Length: 160
Image 1 (tube, rainbow, N blue to C red):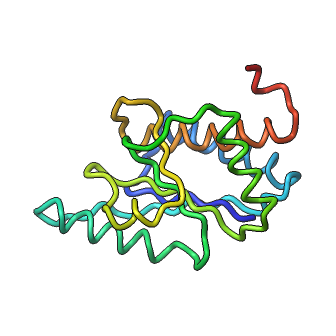
Image 2: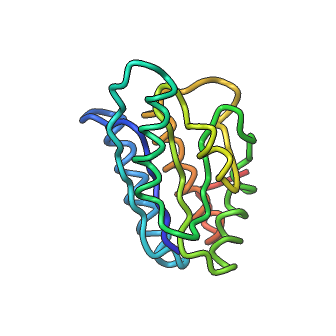
């Protein structure tokens, strides 16, 4: 199964980029041994439209252009479910075992994801009830992907 993260906004050089790169590399290495063939990150430029609805529509169109057909879509959304790491790993493992070709995680910009993208998502998850900057959400998602791979592999990284 291929895993992709599609995020509105760019991570600039600095600690967030370094941490995201670290977890990307860790997941890529651990995941290949578990049947996760590839991890991709697509950065979508933020819309410059004046009104929120137009921004969300433009960003949704750009995100959708990167989603392969028949993908499992997971929305990162503050209204989503709060999953513990083991449950998150079970979802990823089950989709892999069921033969899903692609699992795509989408992170919206400052205005969030369009209602249309949220409706298409098989799962919506949140990292707590707080609102997080999209750069931090990307780092946390990549860490959780790596953690999920270690849980599926029985590696001691996850000690809960």
